[in-house]
Amino acid sequence: MADDKPGFADAPSFISDVQMDYGLSPDKQAFTITFGNFVAKLVPSGPPVVSRRFSLVLPLKNVAAGASLTGGLQGGGVMQPGTGAMLIFRASGLSQVFDPLFDSPNATSFTKPITLAVPEKGDLRITIDLTLEGSATDPKAEADITVTALDLSIGPPQAPIHE
Image 1 (cartoon, helix red, strand yellow):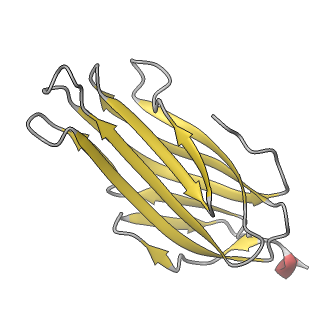
Image 2 (cartoon, one colour):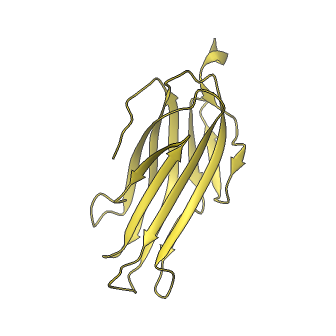
């Protein structure tokens, strides 16, 4: 029966202060979150470390033991030499750390793969932390990073990706 398939709720039960749009697939096994203001900036004469956090609680239904959460986290921006960026994706007590954020010094976008176990009962609790660090040798170095989207789906068990 279609009602026995694992799925996400029609809407989150909790969202932190980051603006977002939540789009659920017709089968309720995948969703896309498009962020409106998930931005962190380092500016001259500003703090040397800047963090931004997004949290969400999403009820689940009919999730079998060992099911997996797969998808990706996308964004972009610019970083001057000497600055650093780290992104942590945490879901239901498991974390993936993405550091460095960009694959090359000249990159202006990123897509980070996500594969984690899904809780068998209850809800999916997601936290995304974005942290920027200024240059220790150049206090005028700047960085501007935006997290734009999160795409996730529920599927059969898979081996976690560890970076």
